Image (cartoon, rainbow, N blue to C red; front, side):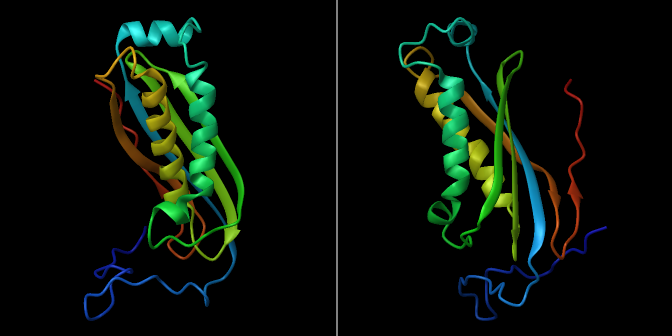
Length: 165
């Protein structure tokens, strides 16, 4: 069971934002899995699945964008440490309402890859939106969440998956 912290790690005693010093932490293998959903119209789903979108294959573009996004997380999120990622995988699977996006990110480093996994999902979802917006401006992105985390001081985290109603 993980201990609950009572103080935010990115805020110092005086309330100022700071980057956490991970210099004394051990280098360990770390992994995170995140998931998100993109809901869209039946027309948009049909055009994607039949390969009829003018911009090309939005699923391949979104997968590549997710991988690239994970690699650039430290440039996008102000207090994230740049990490040497050893693996970034992005899977995009059809659902009844659109697509589910899942990313798995690994590293051997002094801090975890939760933000990289979440960023991969968010960037993949935004790319999917961009590729399909010409035929459906009502696309909805979310929820995006962390499913799993392994490694580091806080140990393992597994989100309880609830069945859909």
